[in-house]
Amino acid sequence: QSALTQPPSASGSPGQSVTLSCTGTSSDVGNYNFVSWYQQHPGKAPKLMISEVSKRPSGVPDRFSGSKSGNTASLTVSGLQAEDEADYYCSSYAGSNMVLFGGGTKLTVL
Amino acid sequence: EVQLVESGGGLVKPGGSLTLSCAASGLTFSSYSMNWVRQAPGKGLEWVSSISSTGRYIYYADSVKGRFSISRDNAKNSLFLQMNSLRAEDTAVYYCTRDFVLSFAFDPWGQGTLVTVSS
Image 1 (cartoon, helix red, strand yellow):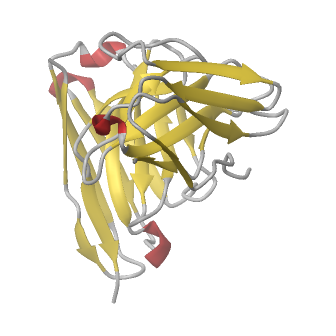
Image 2 (cartoon, helix red, strand yellow):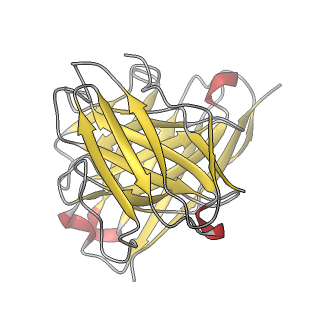
């Protein structure tokens, strides 16, 4: 199975909102509500930001929100802050106890 | 605080073997499924393998099936990844990570251990 598709880059100014997309197929994103999003700063381990499409783990700011429509999931970061600059990866359950990741989006805060 | 600490990475020749370990603390290790996820230099994340809390159920990505073996020792709060027939494309940082609330999400993650396959 192929990786999920994410745009390689996105950007926004401080205080603005930006939405990152993650496109899969009817066999993964479109078929299960098990889409997750991870934030990764350079040289650091990934951090879970969203699970099950839209659930925020404890400690994740409510500026981060997730949604899904059909085969495409989205992560919206509102009120952009400098510390939000990072790589963001989506993942989805793909059946048969397999998880697929996207290629990642580098978010730049201008 | 949950801590996952990987070890065992290093430089290995193509065709060689290596075993990674992950020491867990701050959690009831035997209650959780665990996973290995890797990241090639400058690339994205790739799920590698999962093991259920008891070790009964094990799953692998197609890219490592037949070459890698995941295991765990609940008495020692430890997770392992035995890697055989290593290839250049297995070069990556390998992360140990815990299942998050049965949601096919992973949290937390260890700091990772680098495996380099090169002659």
